Image (cartoon, rainbow, N blue to C red; front, side, top):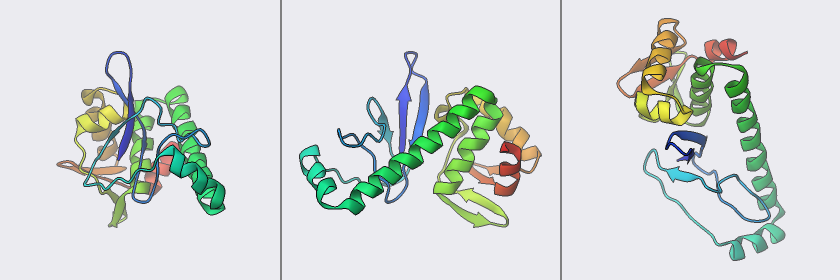
Length: 169
């Protein structure tokens, strides 16, 4: 599931990708950063919800649930911090590469030294996720492909994690 926000002109920015077993939402005790955020499923998804009135007593009674929420929150804050760094100090190339690396960590299968991102993505969808134009993202993907950092085919992207990490460091 993709969580995203829109700016005043309707441009989207992906806040995070939620994979199997992860949670999102808002309660006063914990904020997982979803206020004003839209959710879009990327593949078939089952969503369970719980009201604040039911959830907060669970947090009090089951410390492992509270720790899990804190862990998820900390992970998302780290991811957001890294992404903000890429936005501020680096160009679109690094933003695309960072986002592909993040997707590959959450939902991929290994194939011949590459991680195949297990989500069908168009260039437009990827552009929406990083808040760029399709044309700019297509150019970046072509460059990365020519350099052997990624392999693309129709709606499929494989990333060579070692080369991507070297590029991002």
